[in-house]
Image (cartoon, rainbow, N blue to C red; front, side):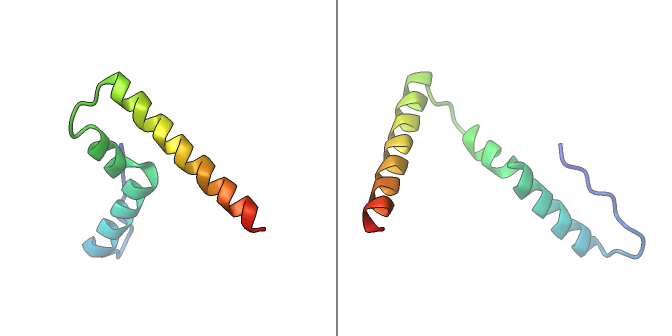
Length: 66
């Protein structure tokens, strides 16, 4: 959970900006989007595998350029 204490002579807008930044850093929005709908474990594994293959291809391309 993200907490932001309002500093002395700090406007609500500034505190809200800090709060949003902290949420982004802690991955709150990413977690909310991930939990938006249920994905079966088999589907999660498949997506994770596809992401890994994408990263490997990208790394391979970068190494070939140098």
